Length: 253
Image (cartoon, rainbow, N blue to C red; front, side):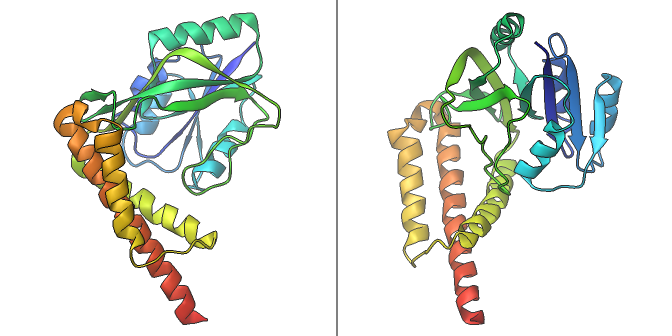
């Protein structure tokens, strides 16, 4: 059984070399779809002999479906550029490959935040379905895309972690979280979700209490505090933006 590794990129020079290097020993094919990086991302990919194709940004789900359609193997391992396969996960992937077991496989993603591995805060365990047959599709969502799992198919979790090098600074975390919040608010607005005056504030409080207290973020030290704080702030922003979009729509009616 062959495995194609597919990766989408945009200005990922900090991460892409580590990602590619982690799969070189077992991948039969590596395809990177770049959305127009202006840093050293493409050069780092080409230096490792991987296939690089260019595609203007379509949205997360559509971009991943586009690159997956280029794969020639029976199975696809879909990775983000800021992820890397650990040795223990690589062992599991090699076993699946040698046994030729087509199917749907998930793995736990362990996140590194500002140089610290996060074991609580609702970020661990973080189970991701990333190994699947070529014909599988991602949902066409602009953000928070998911694998469309055919009815009746089970998902088998592999041993070993997928390393996720998420944020190098808290400022980066806040900026990206707010960007995701804008996209999610747009998605919710398109779905017709309502949002009251109180929703942003209850969303803020609920997210902070959940991550810092219920999910024991306090055990992650000062970074656990900042993860909960920034996540709560972006949650407030998301629903404030949804409320703004809903109000704008009503005024245009």
